[in-house]
Image (cartoon, rainbow, N blue to C red):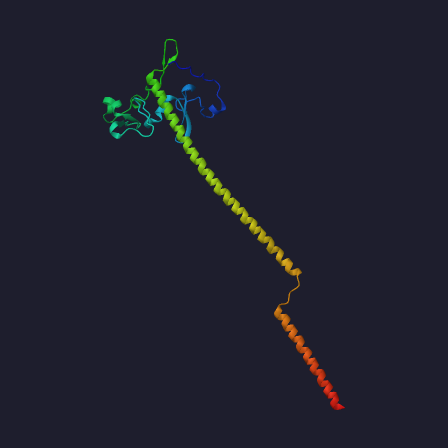
Length: 239
């Protein structure tokens, strides 16, 4: 399979590149700019862009480094696997062959400087080609990237739902607080207006005080009548 040529490297640096930012067309590991093999994946909660080799190198426990079988949910059973002593990658026990005796080291760790998961060959015409082994490595890297982004989508969806619920609760509390403030303001206005109304009104006499006043007036009238009667009697006696 012939591969397209890599993108040309620009001699002038953009402000983002000068500041250390990595663009989607640059590998965050080896800084290569072969945009047709750059995969997007989340590593430790950060969106990163890797070439096929660097993506596989940074996800050692997600695939078998020999046959490039992707471990979608979980690695093989302990009886059918062997772990690398250096990078904790998981290799099928039948893929490890004679090298499975401890301490086992996977192919990338046995040759850290010269080994590459994805190194296309060049034919006589100068075109880069990809054989079955490289295709399997490329497909495995694509599966890892897709799984990583799918997990990120699930995580951010749950985060968005949680924040939406928190926002709804905060909105309800804010509305209740505003209603309480309006009620307190109304009570304060009523408390200020009542004393002025009381000063404008005349004091009312209670029923008991009215009865006592009537009784006093009746007693005074009776005493006046008696006084007048006694005066009449006294005048008659004098005559």
